[in-house]
Amino acid sequence: MLLIYIKLLMTAVFWGGTFIAGRMLAGSVTPFAAAFFRFVFASGFLFVIVMRRKEKIVPGDRWQLLSVILLGMTGVFAYNALFFNGLKLVTAGRASIIIANNPIVISVLAALFFRETLSPVKIAGILISVSGAVVAISGGHPLALFSGGFGVGEFMIFGCVLSWAAYTLLGKRVMSTLSPLTATLNAAVVGVLALVIPACLEGMPGAAPGYTLTDWISLAYLGLFGTVLGFVWYYEAVRAIGPSRASLFINFVPISAICLGHMILDEPLTPSLLVGAILVVSGVTLNHLPTAGMPRLGSRQAT
Image 1 (cartoon, rainbow, N blue to C red):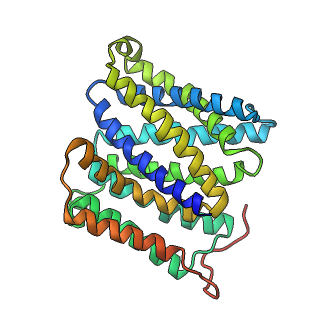
Image 2 (cartoon, rainbow, N blue to C red; image 1 turned 90 degrees about the horizontal axis):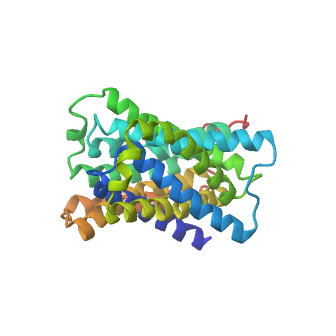
């Protein structure tokens, strides 16, 4: 079980690194093109791994096929489309605050549809962890992030939250019949097919030959670490400890992004970062305290 939590923490670091890679790509690769090549690389890496492990590649029935299509459309296409387009209208800080609500949405939906325990202790842990992400990203002034209202861009970023919640909860069902590798491979392929048209409309075919070596290294990082290892390990954690607890580790992503930004891009470390990190770790710890005898909130038969 300890290995699961180590993998979850490393997944957060990998996903935090995608922000660094994304910043390095921002000046030369368009959003849909970056997403497209990310999942082209990911599909290739996943195919090799699946072949070496001799796992099933193609879904075995219509339900599995429909499930992986939904995974690809929610966790790959919809998330990236909403995220990159939302960032045209919303600053990174505001977007990060909205996305930090992922664990809350997932926990509530998991309680409703999967009968996961949503005790007061777990709720407190989630709120503390999210608060830590808010403090770290906002520089200690969280209210300043919401001073401009909630517009179209914010709704797009909130759509990312819903897309990821759907991806996470659907993944729990899919993994009852498919391995994480097979599910992730098929979701990545679906994402590639869905992303190719908007990427071409952005001018990807003509621009790709001009990408630099740094661009391709960044894209490969996004594909291997940000997608293959990240998605597979996240899937394994969802199956082992449930979507609510697994999703809580998403709050480490902005923390790791800030730390990597300091190490790689010389961005400053601030007191708000340290306070935020302490709150996130405290929230994760509180969320894993025994809840025997605590009331279950929002539990119902899965549908």
